[in-house]
Image 1 (cartoon, rainbow, N blue to C red):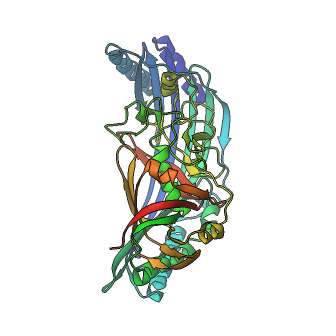
Image 2: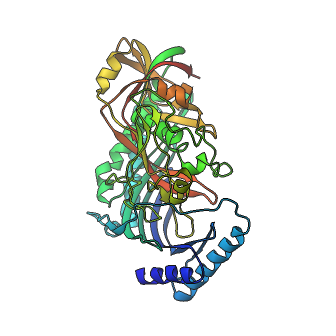
Image 3: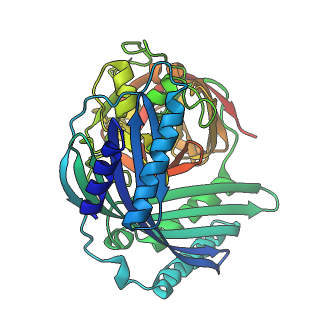
Length: 478
């Protein structure tokens, strides 16, 4: 395949391209879905093909094909160049592929237990057992669990990327993901819902470590306890501790997305939203000195793991917010040239027939020095929100709202009873500025981040430590 991709790049240059990029990508996905204890679907899908991108007189062209032969590759080059030439007649400023630390090498994540060793029947039985235990656990807490959906995916992605200016990288990365959705119900108490995800770049050994049966049982029991025992939370201004699941979502939505350079340039407004940040926002204070939000694709085993992006650029940790100040944006080679910096390796595509765009990988608040007990003991009156039931955020990633699920009242430095539906409604700057202590623990959750049109769902991690906020106005409790 490398030889064919080299021929694609050479052909594009011969036909007049100023820059050429060829990417082979193969995605094999196996999915098992169990809905309310009944098998809903078992699927095997494979998508593989070539994506070629060219630059001609300041205009980009992209084309793809799932036919893996020289004739189809040549036609893809012709289509990409045709599009670029047509666009070049309307270009004013023009596109440039900026300087970058281009890689040469191969990345391979070797699973300890291959997905091939675990058949669909075994996967389905695992989910069935988890479903049974979840229903039993909810009943122990006094509630029914009438709606449950468990989805288990295994994915293997192989890529080879060659560019005309020297990048030559390939990778083979297996991933496994669990998604669960539960609704607990009681005729006098109403209903509450919980969804959670796990995901890593590894083999089936990760599923065994997760212990899905135990995880489903614990989540269902906690959900039912919230439904049966939670009381109205206090209202007004309180101190608040956010769990890693919540702080991870905040980091992703209110720091990662607004820090995407294509959003800053206004190019994602029609597809995925805008940002409150401007091109000159570097150096702007948005939080306390304890806030350090990073995006790091190089974390071994992470769901968003990669060492080279889809433009062949070496990946590195990106510090989005440093000590409360906007420090850098997520860049690909095109946006980096606009800002006069080097790409920091944030270009990703979720399939061979999608163009690489600026994306997050693993976005999280870096840990501090406090234990959870130390965070709690210094709160006279407050709320601890361990996880969330729902959330929303505006297009500019500035005004946001989180409804807690498992949440507890804090009185005089001690956790008290469960509270129901506490609402955190705050601005991005207001939230990060209220941080006065950051825990030393660090936990991650998996997600698929959606962006662009056509939509590209990309595997990511969100995470962080327990984090304390001072003087937050609390609502909710219905």
